Length: 403
View (cartoon, rainbow, N blue to C red):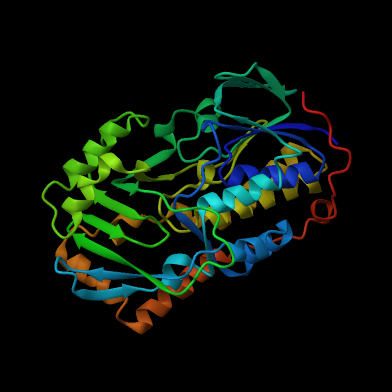
């Protein structure tokens, strides 16, 4: 089998999922992650439909995902006096099963840590793609050569930037920003009470604030022109959020007052990746690096399906990346079409009171809500998931040593 050594950039979800499958087939897998440790806790992610379930089953993690799932959380849309206006059901927010992002990351890491090499606190600084391999320069570790390189490092992918081109050529800003404030405890166990919970959602034109629920302890979404800031400067980011909500009502002033003491804070733009191909030479993208759409609701499912398809096509092609990458592009470009269309910003933070009322009315009318649920179901299942006997029958035969 050609192409025995691989580098995966990113250790959130797509990266460890791909590492699991490639390690199973006998590849020597190295995963590099910018963060110093696994990122535990955080927002909740979800899966929907038989395609997602089938991939979780084939990975052998379905039962564990269900064991550590969060409960269903309904979002109560309220006005400035906490009067109930409408309800976004937990089935719409959380799919069939919902789990904290950090818990899912931990599950995937546990199944790859012993047999794959993880480099935490490091990142790809440069790469040169050649006919015979990819020469990779790291920020901290010694330079190395790999047969294949995979970018699973998010919407701001370093691998995509180094191999495909500048971020502005592939990432489209959609006119909104979001901020996640606070942390949610990880490692939910089977004894946790999963009774139906509720969160509160408040809107003003172009602004949204949510309190409660596993999606995020506090979530803000606001319309804005493009803002220049250092993504590592959380102090500046907190000022951006405070300025955006300076005159907001409801509970927002109290929420902003606690920013300085927040255990966790993350701000980013709502954006989507737009590219005609996920591969170039010996390099391939998956997850948000390839088909990201912020807060679009399909990212985690796309990441796991993409990892399965990419590894499956490599197995079916006996490691020939040229054949496998072509098939991967064809299948995932069709399946990921939802990521190229949506913009969660106008739904979450409509820019006028009339549009807020119209959005709320959607969840009051059973017929409209039913149509929305059928549409999301169709997107989640719109792929003929292949069996890949060469992948599913593999049992990590004689893994090669890491270079």
